[in-house]
Amino acid sequence: MSRPKNTTGIPVTQLPTLKSLQFGDPLMEYSSLPFCVQEDISLDHGLEMAADLSDGLTQLCMRLHESINDGEIAYTAEVRALAFLSNAVCALTRAASYGLKAAASQEASQ
Image (tube, rainbow, N blue to C red; front, side, top):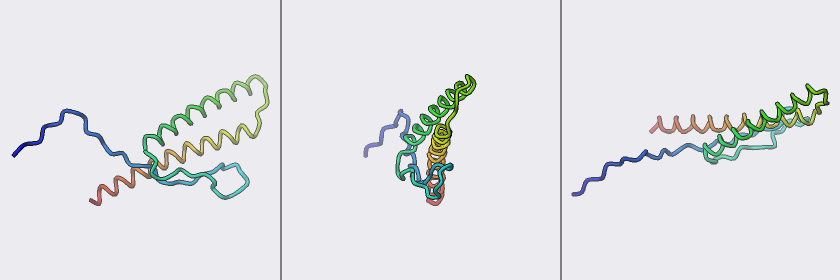
């Protein structure tokens, strides 16, 4: 009877996936939520996307800040775009949080 070898590597953890979540631009004049985070997207991919969008959002806010300080006009479309990006980041991080909670409750019930 052979014995299994001891592993020396780091065990690979199965990360949960994102949960589906609808979102939209809060400043739009319609009440429906036309965009959706797809279910079963990998958690790390969703969080990477949220981080990238957040970085871009920060850069856009800083650029808008400098432009306004220099006396340039800010347009409502720019502010709406910032609100939409913020909403997308929020939806991605909440979908990741819901995925983690669902995986934790599923693990606890086993």
